[in-house]
Length: 124
Image (cartoon, rainbow, N blue to C red; front, side, top):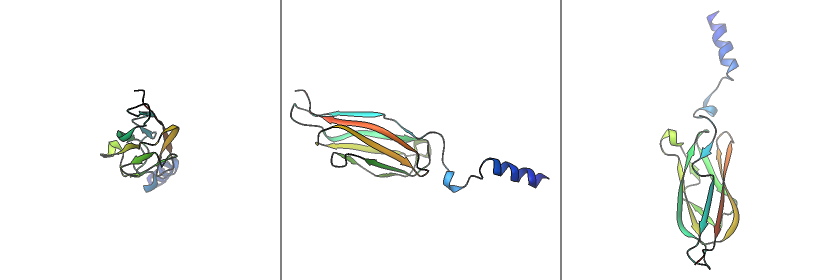
């Protein structure tokens, strides 16, 4: 009878398994938007911009952007979340101006979160 109860409990939770291991809540990042601005009225930002931390979801995480000619990441795969010690990627601009871009972070279970990003000329 105890074996039947255990089997029913495992079936009710979906059985789990390695594919879901490490999934701890909604996939989020420390930034929801990044607005870069150049140092003059004729240039857009170039250089290290932000360190973005990844929370929740299931590692590893893939990091991509729809403006690959304008943004550079120190890594395109993040192996752990912040709760798993580590869990960040660095974003840098390379001087290419753009009004609207997106950074997409996807976990191994195909959950996604996005960061809106811009890089515009400065004001002085």
